[in-house]
Length: 153
Ligand code: ADP
Image (cartoon, rainbow, N blue to C red; front, side, top):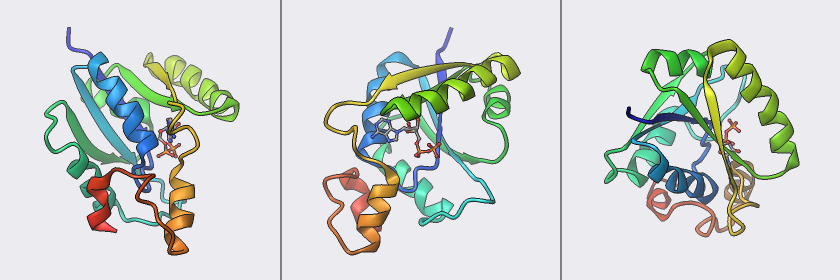
């Protein structure tokens, strides 16, 4: 059986926190879809094309990784693509509380299991929103994002 997982998120932009989770999940799965969720009520800093391009650049040499964008429910995407697992990262107790409800709902709604990886100590403080704040204010984000995306920024 091939083990396939969807890693959903905003990735606005992808950070070293995301890549830590993705890189540690890759040995566990045969295929990983990085799925950029589009929520029309949310304002993004980087448009969907650029966010997709940045992630593709990071994983261009890894045939296990695909990048897509989607609207609607993550469980519907999992069913459509026939991917039985969702991958999520956990940084802190707030993430846990929030993710717990979503994971339990996704299991009830769509029989999709969520696999959690704990954040690594070196990247636990990194979030896309911190990166956006630093970037907006002209600070140096090079230690917080994969080096492959710097050329797009
Ligand atoms: P969302 O809006 O769905 O939370 P994000 O792009 O912020 O989208 O996050 C996508 C996933 O990556 C989430 O599971 C989140 O917990 C995880 N993640 C983000 N930053 C980190 C980090 N520094 N360490 C571990 N996981 C992280």
